Image 1 (tube, helix red, strand yellow):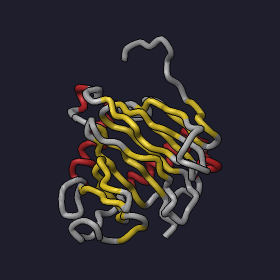
Image 2 (cartoon, helix red, strand yellow):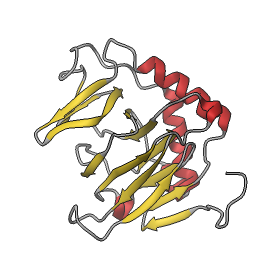
Image 3 (spheres, rainbow, N blue to C red):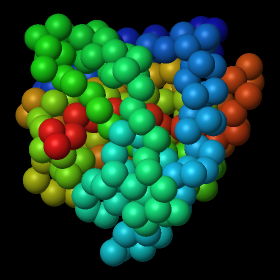
Length: 215
């Protein structure tokens, strides 16, 4: 939007959980999208994830280590079995800069990002409430959004139920959660199809989540 009644700003949603709107400029968004399209190609490319609770509607590709319910492996064990694509150093630097901008430089000092989970959401895709708890590190999780706007539901550390806060994440937005919010439940109950910036050339939503494995 060119003008808004209530301009979006840097917001602490919960202790250690921060939303930074428009963190990625249009050029950086296009660069990330181009990289995601390469990562999504086989081998070890974009796949449908099946969990004990059912099939995820968002599709996923991993870098550095392959996530599967509920652990990490060096190969796409629930896909084509190929070695997972490497995690690029520049993506780790982007993650540390994101944490610095959201939480301050002290929060980023020990954040050696080495894995990425990239989820693609079509307009009808959803993500149930879950925690990112398969890592052996308490470093902040970095979430970058490209494409369609979504409703991001950020909850509490005790239960999937309320209380939670719904945040609108648009293309280019950054969300970081660490500290007391590192193990908070979160999910995506809705994607607003057709809301991606036209110049980006993406139909759907990409979420790039950076984590420190501690492995």
